[in-house]
Amino acid sequence: MKNIDKRHIACWVLMVASVIGSNCYGQVVKIVYPGYTSYWNSKTLIPDSVVYISTPHKKAANRSAGFHATGGRLNENRDYAHSGYDQGHLCNASDENGNTIDEFNSFDQANIYPQLPKLNRLTWLALENYIRTLGVVKIKVYWHGVKGYMGVDKVTIPLWCDKEIWYKGHYEKYSMPNNDTVNIHDYGYYKLK
Image 1 (spheres, rainbow, N blue to C red):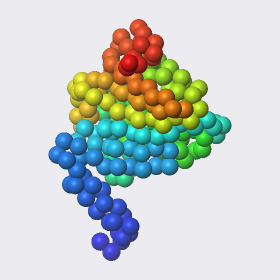
Image 2: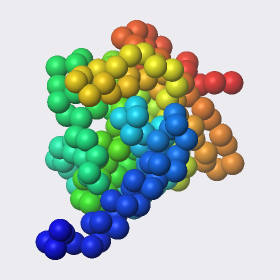
Image 3: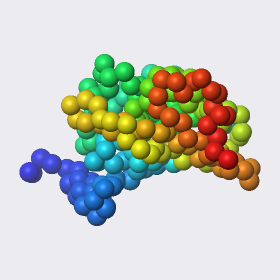
Image 4: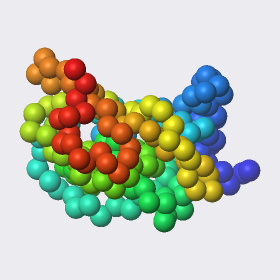
Protein backbone atom coordinates (compact mmCIF):
# COMPACT_ATOMS: atom_id res chain seq x y z
CA MET A 1 0.00 0.00 0.00
CA LYS A 2 2.96 2.35 0.11
CA ASN A 3 2.40 3.34 -3.57
CA ILE A 4 -1.20 4.47 -3.02
CA ASP A 5 -1.77 8.21 -2.75
CA LYS A 6 -3.40 9.08 0.61
CA ARG A 7 -5.86 11.40 -1.18
CA HIS A 8 -7.29 8.40 -3.07
CA ILE A 9 -7.82 6.53 0.21
CA ALA A 10 -9.59 9.56 1.70
CA CYS A 11 -11.88 9.85 -1.37
CA TRP A 12 -12.65 6.13 -1.24
CA VAL A 13 -13.48 6.32 2.49
CA LEU A 14 -15.81 9.28 1.87
CA MET A 15 -17.57 7.43 -0.96
CA VAL A 16 -18.05 4.28 1.15
CA ALA A 17 -19.28 6.38 4.08
CA SER A 18 -21.80 8.09 1.80
CA VAL A 19 -23.14 4.75 0.58
CA ILE A 20 -23.28 3.17 4.03
CA GLY A 21 -24.86 6.27 5.55
CA SER A 22 -27.72 6.42 3.07
CA ASN A 23 -31.02 4.64 3.34
CA CYS A 24 -31.39 1.03 2.18
CA TYR A 25 -33.30 1.89 -0.98
CA GLY A 26 -31.20 4.87 -1.99
CA GLN A 27 -27.50 4.16 -1.50
CA VAL A 28 -27.02 7.63 -2.96
CA VAL A 29 -23.64 9.24 -3.62
CA LYS A 30 -23.62 13.02 -4.11
CA ILE A 31 -21.34 13.92 -7.02
CA VAL A 32 -20.60 17.62 -7.49
CA TYR A 33 -19.22 19.05 -10.71
CA PRO A 34 -18.99 22.79 -11.45
CA GLY A 35 -21.88 22.46 -13.93
CA TYR A 36 -24.25 20.14 -12.04
CA THR A 37 -24.83 18.02 -8.95
CA SER A 38 -25.81 14.38 -9.34
CA TYR A 39 -27.39 12.16 -6.71
CA TRP A 40 -26.19 8.87 -8.19
CA ASN A 41 -27.71 5.66 -6.84
CA SER A 42 -25.36 2.69 -6.55
CA LYS A 43 -28.31 0.27 -6.41
CA THR A 44 -30.17 1.45 -9.54
CA LEU A 45 -26.93 2.48 -11.35
CA ILE A 46 -28.57 5.74 -12.46
CA PRO A 47 -28.96 9.11 -10.74
CA ASP A 48 -32.00 9.61 -8.54
CA SER A 49 -31.77 13.23 -9.66
CA VAL A 50 -29.50 15.86 -11.20
CA VAL A 51 -29.74 19.56 -10.36
CA TYR A 52 -28.19 22.41 -12.34
CA ILE A 53 -28.63 25.96 -13.57
CA SER A 54 -28.90 26.64 -17.28
CA THR A 55 -27.46 30.00 -18.31
CA PRO A 56 -27.06 31.58 -21.73
CA HIS A 57 -23.49 31.23 -23.00
CA LYS A 58 -21.38 31.06 -26.12
CA LYS A 59 -20.57 27.57 -27.34
CA ALA A 60 -16.89 26.79 -26.75
CA ALA A 61 -16.83 22.99 -26.95
CA ASN A 62 -18.07 20.52 -29.53
CA ARG A 63 -19.88 17.34 -28.61
CA SER A 64 -16.70 15.31 -28.58
CA ALA A 65 -16.62 13.60 -25.20
CA GLY A 66 -17.50 9.92 -24.96
CA PHE A 67 -19.53 8.51 -22.10
CA HIS A 68 -17.33 7.56 -19.16
CA ALA A 69 -17.40 6.89 -15.43
CA THR A 70 -15.27 8.55 -12.78
CA GLY A 71 -14.80 8.13 -9.04
CA GLY A 72 -14.55 4.34 -9.19
CA ARG A 73 -18.14 3.95 -10.41
CA LEU A 74 -19.07 1.29 -12.94
CA ASN A 75 -18.75 2.23 -16.62
CA GLU A 76 -22.13 1.19 -18.03
CA ASN A 77 -21.34 1.59 -21.74
CA ARG A 78 -21.60 -2.18 -22.27
CA ASP A 79 -25.10 -2.18 -20.75
CA TYR A 80 -26.30 0.44 -23.26
CA ALA A 81 -24.64 -1.20 -26.28
CA HIS A 82 -27.32 -2.77 -28.52
CA SER A 83 -29.99 -2.19 -25.83
CA GLY A 84 -32.15 0.13 -27.92
CA TYR A 85 -31.74 2.87 -25.29
CA ASP A 86 -29.83 6.12 -25.55
CA GLN A 87 -27.59 7.37 -22.78
CA GLY A 88 -29.90 10.29 -22.08
CA HIS A 89 -28.30 13.35 -20.50
CA LEU A 90 -30.02 14.76 -17.43
CA CYS A 91 -27.94 17.95 -17.46
CA ASN A 92 -27.73 18.25 -21.22
CA ALA A 93 -24.44 18.73 -23.03
CA SER A 94 -25.64 21.89 -24.78
CA ASP A 95 -26.09 23.59 -21.40
CA GLU A 96 -22.54 22.59 -20.50
CA ASN A 97 -20.69 23.40 -23.73
CA GLY A 98 -19.56 26.84 -22.60
CA ASN A 99 -16.21 25.22 -21.80
CA THR A 100 -14.54 21.89 -22.53
CA ILE A 101 -14.33 20.73 -18.91
CA ASP A 102 -18.07 21.14 -18.21
CA GLU A 103 -18.91 19.56 -21.57
CA PHE A 104 -16.66 16.58 -20.74
CA ASN A 105 -18.24 16.22 -17.29
CA SER A 106 -21.73 16.17 -18.82
CA PHE A 107 -20.83 12.80 -20.37
CA ASP A 108 -20.15 11.18 -16.99
CA GLN A 109 -22.35 8.16 -16.21
CA ALA A 110 -23.48 10.13 -13.12
CA ASN A 111 -25.46 12.33 -15.53
CA ILE A 112 -27.36 9.82 -17.66
CA TYR A 113 -30.16 7.30 -17.58
CA PRO A 114 -31.73 5.08 -20.28
CA GLN A 115 -34.13 6.87 -22.61
CA LEU A 116 -35.67 5.50 -25.78
CA PRO A 117 -34.51 7.42 -28.87
CA LYS A 118 -37.91 8.96 -29.66
CA LEU A 119 -37.99 10.45 -26.18
CA ASN A 120 -34.34 11.49 -25.95
CA ARG A 121 -33.81 12.79 -29.49
CA LEU A 122 -37.22 14.35 -30.11
CA THR A 123 -39.57 15.25 -27.25
CA TRP A 124 -36.98 15.60 -24.46
CA LEU A 125 -34.70 17.56 -26.81
CA ALA A 126 -37.57 19.91 -27.71
CA LEU A 127 -38.10 20.60 -23.99
CA GLU A 128 -34.36 21.29 -23.57
CA ASN A 129 -34.43 23.71 -26.50
CA TYR A 130 -37.47 25.50 -25.04
CA ILE A 131 -35.75 25.86 -21.65
CA ARG A 132 -32.73 27.49 -23.29
CA THR A 133 -35.00 30.31 -24.54
CA LEU A 134 -35.96 31.26 -20.96
CA GLY A 135 -32.66 32.76 -19.78
CA VAL A 136 -31.34 31.62 -16.39
CA VAL A 137 -33.23 28.50 -15.29
CA LYS A 138 -32.82 26.22 -12.28
CA ILE A 139 -33.50 22.62 -13.34
CA LYS A 140 -34.08 19.36 -11.50
CA VAL A 141 -34.26 16.14 -13.53
CA TYR A 142 -35.32 12.82 -12.02
CA TRP A 143 -37.46 9.76 -12.74
CA HIS A 144 -40.16 7.59 -11.24
CA GLY A 145 -41.41 4.04 -11.84
CA VAL A 146 -39.29 1.14 -13.02
CA LYS A 147 -39.83 -0.05 -16.58
CA GLY A 148 -37.25 -2.83 -16.26
CA TYR A 149 -33.52 -3.46 -16.21
CA MET A 150 -30.95 -3.71 -18.98
CA GLY A 151 -27.53 -5.19 -19.57
CA VAL A 152 -25.38 -7.52 -17.54
CA ASP A 153 -25.24 -4.97 -14.71
CA LYS A 154 -29.05 -4.60 -14.56
CA VAL A 155 -29.18 -0.82 -15.06
CA THR A 156 -32.61 0.49 -14.04
CA ILE A 157 -34.78 1.78 -16.89
CA PRO A 158 -37.08 4.65 -15.81
CA LEU A 159 -40.76 4.36 -16.65
CA TRP A 160 -41.22 8.16 -16.48
CA CYS A 161 -38.66 10.94 -16.99
CA ASP A 162 -39.36 14.14 -15.05
CA LYS A 163 -38.09 17.70 -15.21
CA GLU A 164 -38.88 20.68 -13.00
CA ILE A 165 -37.84 24.21 -13.90
CA TRP A 166 -37.81 27.55 -12.06
CA TYR A 167 -37.29 30.83 -13.91
CA LYS A 168 -38.26 34.50 -13.47
CA GLY A 169 -40.74 33.65 -10.71
CA HIS A 170 -42.32 30.80 -12.71
CA TYR A 171 -42.40 27.06 -12.06
CA GLU A 172 -43.12 24.26 -14.54
CA LYS A 173 -43.04 20.48 -14.23
CA TYR A 174 -42.96 17.93 -17.06
CA SER A 175 -43.35 14.16 -16.85
CA MET A 176 -42.78 12.12 -20.01
CA PRO A 177 -43.25 8.38 -20.54
CA ASN A 178 -40.12 6.52 -21.59
CA ASN A 179 -41.82 4.86 -24.57
CA ASP A 180 -41.84 4.87 -28.37
CA THR A 181 -45.10 6.80 -28.69
CA VAL A 182 -44.03 9.81 -26.58
CA ASN A 183 -43.43 11.90 -29.70
CA ILE A 184 -47.04 11.78 -30.90
CA HIS A 185 -47.41 14.87 -28.68
CA ASP A 186 -45.10 17.85 -28.36
CA TYR A 187 -43.31 18.49 -25.07
CA GLY A 188 -46.02 20.92 -23.91
CA TYR A 189 -48.53 18.07 -23.68
CA TYR A 190 -46.49 16.59 -20.82
CA LYS A 191 -46.58 19.74 -18.68
CA LEU A 192 -48.36 19.01 -15.44
CA LYS A 193 -50.99 21.53 -14.44
